[in-house]
Length: 326
Image (cartoon, rainbow, N blue to C red; front, side):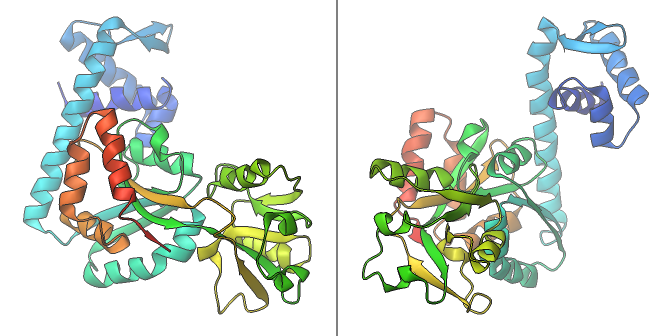
């Protein structure tokens, strides 16, 4: 039995039983994967997959039982490799972060700069996507960390750590009538076309909920996943922008005026997610604390050790109370 064979089986399952996709993901050949899986089945004396000709159709009963063991073996190998790497060279390795555009553009730059200065020999990779995409990347091991505001809780096997609270603002061209409002209201905002995020990005549902609870009609004329796109169309006079407060850049957005809307919408919480049952390199713990200073190594280890769902939720809510507002 070879570790590579176990890896092939697990990857085929991750790819929806598609050997071609698994071969592409692992940078190997389709026949090579098929032959290695068959060799493993012969050695074990059982079939892992049911087949229709050359095509895999489903896991056998034995396969369903064995796959969990394969995953745990591969996880233990990963722990061994990371433990050895920390002893061999604690300041060399790689860190892959999956996150949204908002985090990558407005929150991470200063933290990344700080991290790179401290760990110049760590290869850093940032992948942007929707919250669902980045949660999946982390759950499947493609990324070490996920940073997002929503969808992370949908994936089992992820440990969630609340980092900070944030809210929204209204962006308008200078001289817009809303600037004259003494206290901004949803009623006033609803009088204008709205440009905001697509659903599934930046907790968009919070915006809709606020208007609906007040019984207000509101006209969303354009949506985008990128706050810079939203600001572009605000500049073009298509509507008022409802974006994350952190997306306002004092230098680049001098032609726009930002109106605080924190009193209009429920605050959102950005969280960091990591896979359970994996060993984090020492510099990853350091990055987490740079991103959110209240999350110490002991906090991460405590959260990863909790397996009960109710206890997980209680611990999450406890840490939410410690999260600061940005």
